Length: 323
Image (cartoon, rainbow, N blue to C red; front, side, top):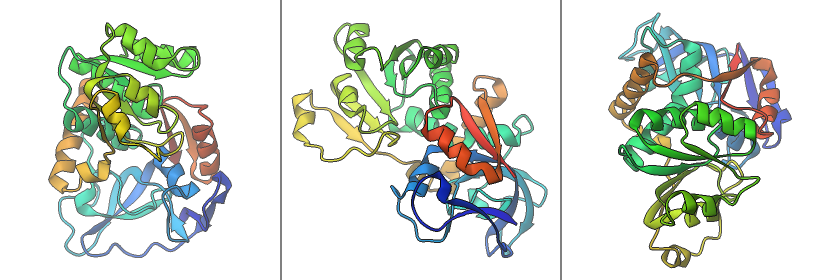
């Protein structure tokens, strides 16, 4: 089968399309024939070496398709089931993959494989951010960075569904308009305005109780300065690079602040937690409260072009690969 492989860390061009042999699914595994494959920012971390790998390696953590074969002892799914997965061993950039059956989620009738591959990882991320890391309540005001990206647009819709006032950041008037259309209450163009100053003005000088920051080092100080005393910074991504060299005393100086660095893997480590989070996400998709925003679909062999578009911040919404 065709698969994208990498033999060293580097730019998009280190990803090569190769023909490989996929062994039969092992014990507890199911083979999933991919229909759509999700492209996520974490894929660029794996490819670039920010998250070190053992080479040669597959790449990609999210896909949706149909169960084609079951290994011994695999339970919870049947041949022919439409399913999706995210996380686990790398290798989703391929025509098929063997996946632990207890990490697969079945797709309801109202959710297509394109929607699932564009929403599952990003949607589960928003689920744990909004419903678990800091459980939002109606009427609260929050700050969410990079709101026009794939995760951000889901966050805009989920915040609107919860009755939360979401202050969003974006890098252009076009992206700001998109975030507003998806449910953001206010959008700050970070290229033209000081984010923390504007957040304080919008909140009567107090700041917000929680900031969700998937950007990393470029927004770290602005995020801290946007918090109210004893507020929480949820740093869940490194799009601009990792936050390093932090003096913890700065948290005291800025108001006894909290910082957490959560991961989806931790929040969905138990199969029952994964199933519950996916059920909540898919219910909102079926109700229309959250709609996929798929901006481009690339052929599997064009994975490098997809990464260039993603890292160049040329895109909004979600990108997909199609075998």
